[in-house]
Amino acid sequence: MDRLKDKFREKAVPLAAEIKDIIKNHGDLKLGEITVAQVYQGMKGMVGMVTETSKLDAEEGIRFRGYSIPELRKHLPKAPGGTEPLPEGIFYLMLVGELPTQEDVSYITGEWQKRSNVPKHVFDVIEKLPVDTHPMTQFVVGIMAMQTESVFAKAYAKGVNKKDYWDYVYEDSMNLIARLPRIASYIYRRKYKNGAHIEPDHKLDWAANFAHMLGYEEFDMKRLMRLYLTIHVDHEGGNVSAHATHLVGSALSDPYLAFAAGMNGLAGPLHGLANQEVLSWIMELKENLGGGLPTKEQIAEYIKQTLTEGKLYQDTDMRYYVKLILVLQHNKIFTEHI
Image 1: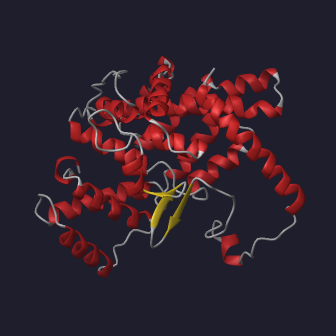
Image 2: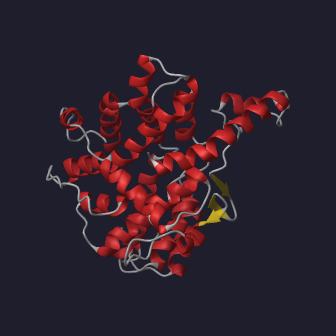
């Protein structure tokens, strides 16, 4: 039996009963008001769901289950000889609300290693696309091609009690998480490295194996990947991609279909595509400062210049990436891999 699933069941079943009771006894309670502008402009600023996994504060920054990024870097388990937290650890924290032990993290690493095999037909479908197709389009196509493996879809087709839906959704979600780095790295190598693909190394943790499949074997790059994937694990529950995933999943579409919907939302320039724009901004920063490792003062001055010239990107992720720059600068890996 999957001990992580047992732990999740232990937490989730009482919580589901509590939520059911809240809806029964307080379902008619009104939570604030909405404006005409919100209704017409894509629900901007409208509270659409309850989320407990993370909270983004304009001044304090993001917290995951109440922990700040510096606190997570201190408390979450690390790889042997590593300096940054393993994403497996924050996944455990997000799922069950408790800080994991090293054993908990090793268990998840093992689970994702066992589940990471991607069917050949997924790569065959991706290969049918022109090489210059945007990576996000290739990524969504790969996810959709993998939907043939959905445990939930197969179980639902045979007939299953709705109380057991979560079990099959859990299996699909774990399989998806395990396989996504393989698909993402395949697309990266196809588009930018002339299709010279790298097989996974199942001795490595999830993030380090992703760096390996991308083609980066340096210790610092694996360290960066662990930190990068940890601090990107969640961004509140109401953004476009999270909302789209929840919305499609609420129709009992399986996790592959729901996640693909979320990725299509993420591809928009006011959401995830802003990551691409901000990374371009970082490259411009590096070029304008003459290369080398910038100081915090230089970064701050360049940010002020960007604001003065009215070039701030239209996504709130800008503040988040400024913090990411400072993290990279602190870790002495800015110039090597950005």
